[in-house]
Every structure is written in structure tokens, then in C-alpha cells.
Length: 58
Image (cartoon, rainbow, N blue to C red; front, side, top):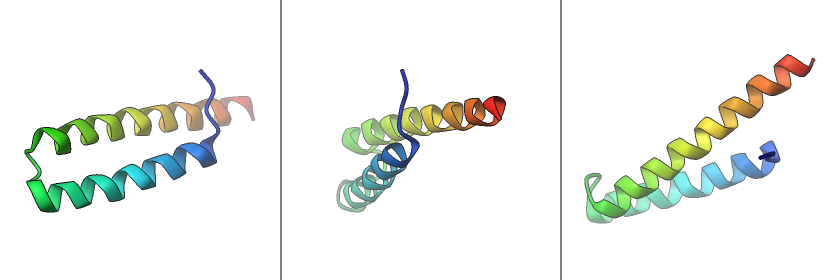
């Protein structure tokens, strides 16, 4: 699946801010914080893979 890196970075930043807010209210070990952290990891992995592919194409 192809992702637009700018859009992906936007999503990562939004999720980061949302996760921080929830972690402050509910704690970092709350189920919602953990789920957001896992989603953030997934998006960061996609971003890293897309960066690696971009450097291979150059």
C-alpha cells in the first residue's frame, strides 16, 4: 500500500498529540493509551519503510 508521506506525517503528529492528552488524563498504561501507542508505532513503521523505499529509488 502506498502512502503520501506528508499525509502520513500529519496523521502521526495528530495521533501523537491525542495520545499525549489521553495519557495525561488516563495514564500511560490505560487501554486507550496503549492502543494509540500501538497505532502510532504502526504508522511510524510505515513511514520508515516508505523513506527507505524513497532512498532506494534515487
